[in-house]
Image (spheres, rainbow, N blue to C red):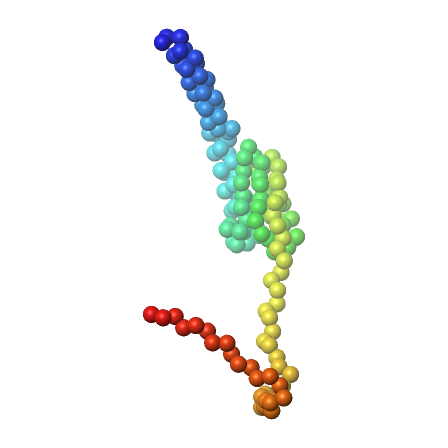
Length: 142
């Protein structure tokens, strides 16, 4: 019985070691705090320099000083300005700009027009053309 429990105990220890190594954060607590401060500074500068709408529209992630920007922007100029603002914050190592320029919204559709004058009477069926008969739709029974 003693011989069978040794390999199992060894397996449990190895598994526990592997799990504990995988659970370690890749950043120290100090680095995480620095990254949070960088993110806050970038968001504040974006709000003041670009516009308040960037607070919710632009996603800012910071890991080890590397900033990743994502989200929709209205123009290439706005995209470049947001990147410049992010680069200007102290502690930023590099910026990955994943911002996407969205197309301008399409013009509102025009109201349908008809070729008939507003006072014209609808054509009368003189019997030479097939008559339109609407197909009855079933009525639900209650």
